[in-house]
Each structure stands twice: as structure tokens, then as C-alpha cells.
Length: 130
Length: 130
DNA sequence: ATGACATATCAATAACTATTGAGATATTGA
DNA sequence: TCAATATCTCAATAGTTATTGATATGTCAT
Image (cartoon, rainbow over all chains, first blue to last red):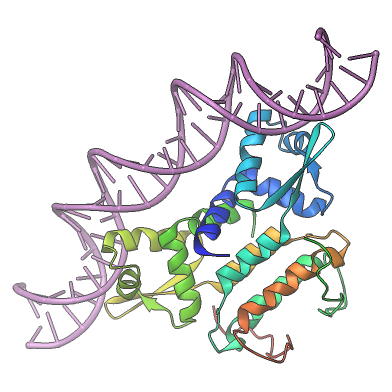
């Protein structure tokens, strides 16, 4: 992730419909959703509007698309999202981990909706997907 | 963090000068930097331009300011940054941690430029700063 | 109080972005 | 091939945002 990529990504996320689409796809998981379903979830947005925002998100590298029959399926690009975050927070303490550790540890909640054991080692660190 | 706050924050981060300011302040740590130094670091931006972007960032909750003599010192608001990230990535797996664990674990690098022990428990979880 | 310094505010202009509606492209089944 | 479905592209318009230069506010030392 470099600066122009990050700027494009943040611009993409700064629009209500697009932010909702990304969050919808993050929750939808790797299987993704067809464009039509996404537009329907956005309060029945027109096809041109949905397409405009989806292609904006794809150009920003925040979502991936694949054709499946007559539908085009979109899914969240998690590596871009984590790359974006890393770009923003890199060197947040510059040698003083105690300064930003609380901020960083607050992020571990994103993958555990309602867990009780706060063990961050709950998964093997294998890159099993894109 | 709610949706309007996130939209404002992402909009703030989608502008080159503002993104650079935030990253500069993230690296500068809690002590922060005076507005003049920030403008100078932005290639000698005019005071009105620097002020415009700084107040934009402050309204978005991404930076904090305090007066110190005749200078106004700005610093990064780490809790807002982590809140923003959590908002974006919340429920990224929706019950399947193995899906997003690689993405989440990629974020632990932000606080450890070149450490060898990957122990995330290296600090007491006390909120000792803003 | 005065002059110097640091930063914020204001008004005008220029540049960018989202929405709409019409039409084009691609896929499937009869 | 034809009709139906799903999505994309295009052009025009309206709304938003950044920059500039001038001016105002607040702070400090003399």
C-alpha cells in the first residue's frame, strides 16, 4: 500500500453508499453478493448508481468481482483493507509500544463479535485465501 | 464510532495533505507538533491552508489540539483511529474467524517496526493518554 | 500599549464528485 | 434468433470541496 492507493481507498470509503457496500461485503464473507442484491440492500438503488459505486470500489482495490452466470458477484478485498490500516497506523509509536498498544489491542474485537476468551491466538496464521 | 463519524473521518483522510498530516502526527506521538511545523513539513503550505486542513481533521475527531504559548499543538487521536478501523472491520468473519484472521494479524505490525518477539501482551492495558 | 509572531477566519474561484435517465453489452433459455 | 434478465456506460446537471489572498484574533516581550 502506497500513498496514492491509500488516498483512493479513503475517498472510496468516504461516501455513504460505498461505505455501506463495503461493510455489507465484509459481513457477507468471501462468497460475496451479486450486484443486484447489493443495490437492493442499499434501499433499492438504481442499477447505474450501484454500478458506479461498485466500479469505484473495485478501482480502489477494496472489492473483487467475478462473473457467475448473468450475475456479477462482488466480495470484500480484506488484504487491501488491512493494508490500508497498516499504512495509516504504521510506526504509530516509533519505539514506544506502550503508547499505541491500547489502540492496537482495541482492534482485535473485529473478528470476535461476542467471545469470552480474549486469546488472540485462536487461529493458525496461514494465508488460506486471497 | 457510528456511520456519520466514520464517513467524516474517511473524507478527512481522503485528501493528500490531511493524510500526510495524520501520518506525521501518528509518528510524532502524543507530544504532537505545532501548526507551523506541520505546515512546514507539508512543503511550506500557507497558514490558511494548513489551518483549513487541521480544523477539518479536528472536526473529524482525528486530531486533538492544545494551546502552548503562542503555538497550537496538534496530536493524533489514536482512539478515533482504532474506532474507525473497528467500525470498518467489525464482524468481518461473522462466525468464521479463520477467514479474516490473516487480515487482522497483519495489523499487529503497526506497532512493532522491527521487533523479533511477536508477543502482543507487551504492555499493560492502561489508558494513560488521550 | 506597541510591535512581532502564530494561527484562524472569510469570500471568491476553480476543480471534483454523485445522481439521473437513456441506452448499450453480455448471458441464458426457448 | 428472440425475448428476458443482469449489469455496465454515457452525458448532463447539481452539489461539494480545496485553494488563494487578505484580514482578524490571540499571545508574548519590551
